[in-house]
Image (cartoon, rainbow, N blue to C red; front, side):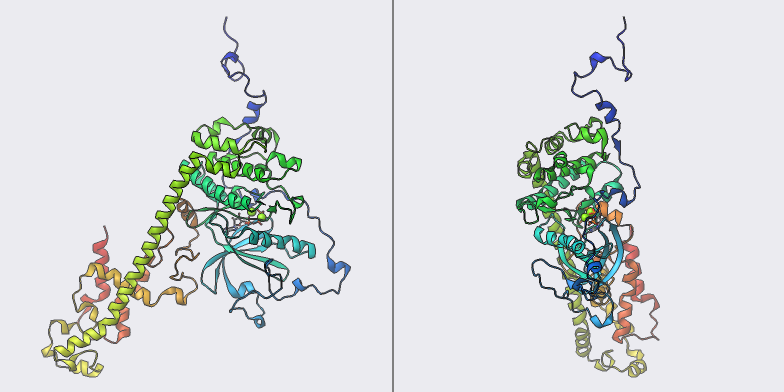
Length: 550
Ligand SMILES: Nc1ncnc2c1ncn2[C@@H]1O[C@H](COP(=O)(O)OP(=O)(O)OP(=O)(O)O)[C@@H](O)[C@H]1O
Ligand SMILES: [Mg+2]
Ligand SMILES: [Mg+2]
């Protein structure tokens, strides 16, 4: 007699004996791969309605509110006195906002429920930053105080390589501005562009970075409470950082976990429903974040799928390709019982994590060293070519003197006497009296790029143009070509690409405009009548480029 088969086409006896409740398979079908092309606002967590007292202006209509004054005021909880934000560039009489006077807004990076984030260049130091400006003006003093709390939280976090660096904050015309370091984008954007699961090595990198960032918070008794891919930022070095500390609370009670709000339901720990706020909740959210990006899985916002994930069931059709070590880490982070859930310290002590951390440190150190070496090399080349340029004229003059032809030396001869000079006594190198560049028959291959750097160095664009980076080391400046297709760089950011090359990234066109021929004009050696068209330095440069092209 044939064994009856169920609707899934399997004989009941061949199934695994009762590991899951009957409804799990139906619920598991509700898990799905991530869908592409969602707008950023899709990711915003639902916010509870704002409970604020009626605006003070309604109670005391004529009362002056210091924060509604048009003047900008620095916001800091370290130095509570209200002072204008420090900047040499700001001139109150101009009537423009502090933001407009001190920053060049480049583009909008994103929008959250509290603020719009802009990529800006500081007119003061020429570096790139992110500035978050609150979406709506303060509705009253309590609304203002609530928004200002984000500044206090950022200040509490302090500096850590795996937390987004806070620079300063100020308020103006009832809006709050928060200036932070600029990142390439969020982990969510990266994962959406990848449109697939993160490769294993990157998963380990992200895990190590975020555990380090979370350890920094937890060691200070701070709970993030909003860990999710949209709030994890990728720096230009490829390092992942925790950011958006808007929902952070302090466990020691100074701002009380009584005010704590749960974040996005997709990443929310189950115990938060019972009002239990603790470090374990952050570990769970981090686990969910890692599950999402490592499996490219759409996390449920509710329903059975949501419950199952919080009962310790991981959907095997998504997790089967994960490295076994990583799966263990994930299961420990997603333990349904917050008392048994892994702590950050325990996770960091796991051999698999320690191995991954060692590798991470090594690659980051190599990347850092290579970056610094490249910058040093570029500076050296610039310096050498500068010295060579400075010595060229005295040397040429010396050669003329020694040769006893001071009168013909282009440095001494007036343009008229030069032209009227006896051409019959000209020698080979006299013919090319236009410029010293070609006189000495220097080997072209190493010197042509060197010259280009020299000219580039003389007119280093960062000094004059706010659009181009300055040659500062270790700044937060972006490399050049900050183009709209920065998704490509976003991808490369995790591949540990050093962010150092500035001088060498000149476009061919910029090299040509700064070619030696332009210098020859300015140096006054140019002889327009000389038959030298085939020896134009520009032509040499083109020849060099032709030769060096594969
Ligand atoms: N430092 C930064 N560098 C690059 N992009 C950033 C930075 N800060 C924010 N962004 C972009 O702006 C978006 C919104 O920023 P953020 O999460 O800080 O705002 P929010 O209003 O607090 O949002 P939420 O609703 O999550 O609380 C981010 O998802 C990211 O795309
Ligand atoms: Mg956010
Ligand atoms: Mg926020």
